[in-house]
Length: 468
Image 1: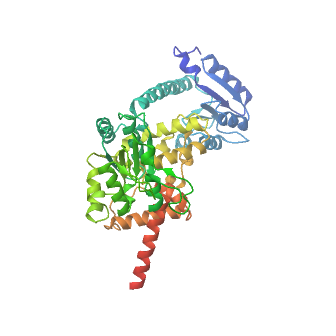
Image 2 (image 1 turned 30 degrees about the horizontal axis):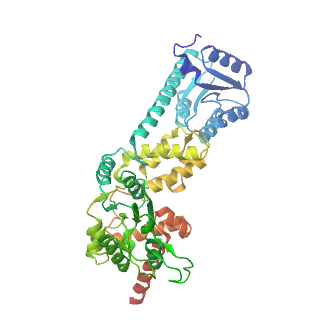
Image 3 (image 1 turned 120 degrees about the vertical axis):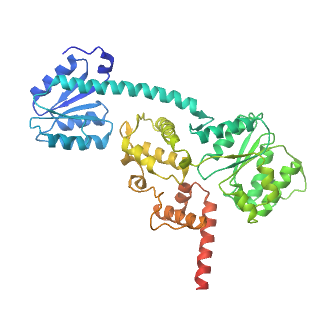
């Protein structure tokens, strides 16, 4: 059989022939190599599996009936390890039912003996063309990924394009910005992009998570302190506003700050002045404040929990970052981005996700948004041993069917947002076996915020029991 005119495509496709008949192995390998394919053969199923495990072949031509291991068992173990493998089963006892069963189990094709090499070549040429196109697509995806990356943020959905365009406009002006959006949606990345695009990009960018510190420590962190001004203050230290003078300070979870801290921040914005804790001296600073919150600050203002004057000072320019459920079309490109990132970190090279893994990711609700997706892909990249990440490499809660829960069924009833939040946090805690540190990481919030929420719900539960 003469080599195909598309010889490079054939030569890139490696094939392993497995049959308990040495003569059949020899003939098949000879025909395949003469046709331009790279082929190896063996009569030992374990040796063939080793080649699969090492990535030594992309296609396996396997006899169905073998004494040591039948073709179905080989198929199952191969796809378990690498769902991107293509297995073609060959049998001397062909039937339509057995062919259907083979396809259902994941075989790419099912041939009868003696092998019709004309048909086999047609099937292999289809695969060779598919592999060649897939390689071209991966190159195009890499270029697309570069074009869709905005200062570390990846997205192609209309909602994210709008965020990128507004960020470009806002960044030119040295004004305060409020970034809103659900936890884990990428608010800090947007803040960093604003700084990098601003006129003070060469100056410092300081970050403070307002929910992670109690009030006294937060004040010291932001404004600095004098030695001896409080217990543990062994040295005089400047705060972040002094440290980043001339640059940008990012205040994450500003909705968690107390009224007294809000008053101090308002004074800073109005007068550009700060006082270190324990010092009478007033210092002038010029910093751009970018604040972020996952709360509805307008609602917090109406409820009297957030200062109205501070809110309007911060929100003259507001950028809303959408949650992942509002930008589902970004999931494939985000997965590609994270696979590339963690593949490099762990010394692996992935070709993508299996189809069933893609379906699992698209069916999930992503309460933790992009941060949760990144954590899932990071863990899957560690667990995966093949070229493709399969559903078995994903966390257990993503492998279970029926997770969406978006449709209204007979048991659904309207609930206060606080109750929904309580139930979700409780479920995450249960999935983490009560480990609050892991639960806070999965929820994408600070440990202090989680402890504060749990303390509040415990008090509410105690009050409810007392009133009964």
